[in-house]
Length: 444
Ligand code: PLZ
Image (cartoon, rainbow, N blue to C red; front, side, top):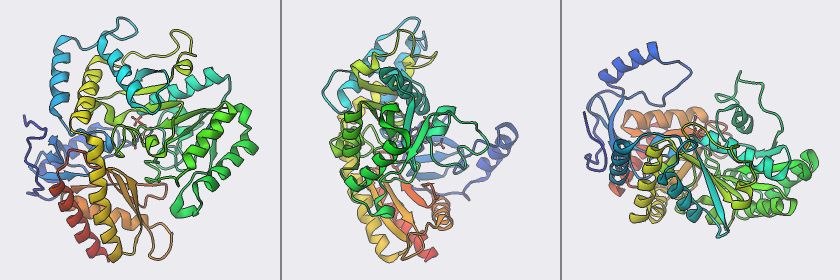
């Protein structure tokens, strides 16, 4: 058995075709056993990962610019995560917090109350997945307000469960054929500076107009929005947009929910992306990066809202599993010890610098954008804003063949995004950018 973690050689090493013969053999087994609706971006089968690399069964070492979709921010098999998980797994694996509680759950809630924006009294509840956290934020907002309507925005991604599918904007692949969807979900336009050219206040006025005229503020339980939109295209709303929307929510008694599942926990160079805009959400959903790869999610927010729900109204068998809580405490300790907020800002400087230089030579890059280590390029037909998803796909595939694990995203599928572990060394990030430059020059 290979061991991963930060001691793995931090190198790109390609020793077979990608995917190699052993991965291909595993893929044949998988094809017979795993439902084909479950995809994989790059079917190399992993045996170890850590720092900024993923090592496959054929011995290839790929540069990781995905972090398992913004999850392993502290790195794979981070020492502090591993040691706490090992200790916890040997002590006990599950009692169910609703049956017999334990300290780890309480401590995770205490830490999240401290780290989320605002100094008001806060409480938290723990769940297993991001979608589950979003659903529970909606439940809490509905009970607190006594209202039904949920407002979401264009390009939003909130999950794949029935309610969160309704909240997610993009049809393929997330929604096609899976209806009917949950009711009382309304979609409003968002700020997308590259495409709408509006200032933050102008874009907020447009969003608010739709809420007022088409839904009615007094019917709205909550507005749920990603402060940096993730799957929808790494869209950073124009400055002031989020603050104007949050102020509107407050004035109308609407719960303002920041879905920080992808953008939270140091990813953007702050504990939460809301911090960059000085926005204090009523409720924050947290998942992904919080537990170093183990499944854990949370809703954190104003104590009086969190406590609106009757006793027994929130929960689930596994929510806040003790092993996942131990992992979260290890991950949070690592974020503090290594100042991963500072590191994410360094990564932003490195990646944005390299990508801007590349954009000067490659006009299909319409925009370089993002915050911290959540950075992307939008691929368009040169000189226009017309999306070019085919080219984005070729660039990503070219990176994969050269041993760099990249992801695409976006409503139009034309965004190439970069989400390295925050512990990835500079040398690997530069090498990944060298590879991307080579791949783009082959496509120019
Ligand atoms: N909210 C903002 O980014 C998960 C999903 C990829 P779960 N994003 C990656 C895919 O194809 O399934 C996400 C998110 C935001 C909610 C979620 C949902 O989190 O843990 O996947 O349920």
